[in-house]
Length: 177
Image (tube, rainbow, N blue to C red; front, side, top):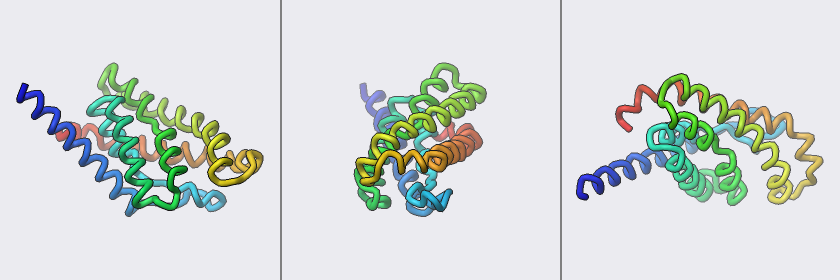
């Protein structure tokens, strides 16, 4: 019983560390990719979240995403408020990547999971932006639709960068996790 409690405590501490790293990364690294949609800023918060997902599973990845999104949304990204929190949670690629990777923990399935996650995030965010962005930003859907090439491109680029970095560094730090 005590051994299991210690394992859970260590796991929780590692997950807390990953959330803290994600918040620090957002604080120091965030910039728009396309000037036409400057409110969409790249940030590397999903890298530690993805690493935690690969280490602890997709359910842990969802929890890491929610905790990171809430903390980020009330601190370093407070200007985006509830809108930013909701969009960060919806845009997570950890579910797809984590479920695929969990089945066979190999470099090949990590790559397949990350690619599928990038594609899923890009598609899901098209729908999410068409529904949520008009509500929070007070603009008509046709305005959002006109920006969709930028929005879809942004999500594909952001997820792609975060997926590549995760792929390159996860195995190197997985022993620690």
